[in-house]
Length: 568
Image 1 (cartoon, rainbow, N blue to C red):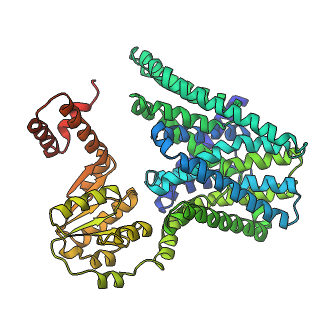
Image 2 (image 1 turned 180 degrees about the vertical axis):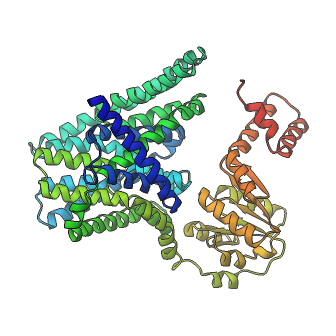
Image 3 (image 1 turned 30 degrees about the vertical axis):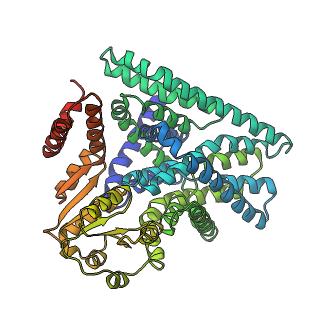
């Protein structure tokens, strides 16, 4: 019975995930490994336990759709506009450069030009789902590395439609390709404008009307309709469904319903994304890989090395230091989910031979599996390489004059610079540590006491006199780096007063539990500043505003949080 077999497939998927994923997490590996391993075990190349593998794969693609929708909810049109240089500049160069170089390598190995174009196009893409989920797990999506990686992935998703069209025309008249690509670009532009207009003019009234019914189930249904409907529409117009979902999320980010929508979608995102990773695991044919181990291994290493180097060089051209450039390159070095689609279409059209296609599919699947490993080691590899050009701890010690009662600034971005300026105005000495070599060079050229170093390292903290300091400020983009720096400081300098910049109040509470003297939420502090500006605009006396601000801060924002909570 079909219903019985479908139910059995669901049970097998759940059992595999429930047993394998926790074991992998207990071994301190990424949960992604667990899902990939579970998929490999129950898939057609493992124990072949599923009756409808294709049905599972069809459902699995919604994991990427919901993931991109959630990412869109975290952005806004203004933030995307600020990222446009990275999306359309760096993203375009990444796809073109990687595609051309990898295509040229394919020609060098004897492939015909149409086949080489297909191989280059497919391998230029990276895995949106695996990379973004890895960044989320590591708390680095909001960091500069995370934002740049997201920008490149967004352009790759934009490029999927034209690339699929290109594959379909590789065996046809070459003169028709520019015209067809132009038509696709026009359709994509129409879709983007339509979504933007719909979001700005209709989305808020629709949600307001549904919310007035006080029926949360209907609101959830409308959200699902929005995600899947816009995703379907964009797919019909030559843009990937995932990118359509991202745009839908970005439009909702402009409304007051974003947090409710995020809470509704989060469980679905987790379920379907897990299913997606399991579907990728099902593509891993261990027997085939072992039979062609040397060849597959060589292709995997070639892909990872070529893409990571090319992307790192491009990032360096765009002004990133080698540390960040190498990390971005390693994060995006794998093939992607759309690589499978392009290669599958190529094999159906006869552009790509079956043996070559199988080799490429196996290699791409392995590169995706290796992504969490590359992410884990990327920070260490990049740091090891950049430390060769940055000043050593011994050099820092020689340059620094012994200070007493100074303030250590771990991270010298916008917040660190603001604090440094205020400390200077009051004659309070400080020392800054930053991992951006270009940033350090810039500020040292202006005679500021900023040094290259990793604040997570005890020897660096000793070099800047943490044992003699009166306080330390941690203002680092990466949550993981923030938490590690706090742990090292608190363990080795128990009496040091540590102020930490938190991404939100929940993060701040966790940091205070971990040992921060004070954790300042950047979102609430910005809201507090806006509230003060509004009070000033309506004529509230300055002394009253200062009293309100002082009271809110003394209560650790509690009164302000209550004031901005929505009514029950």
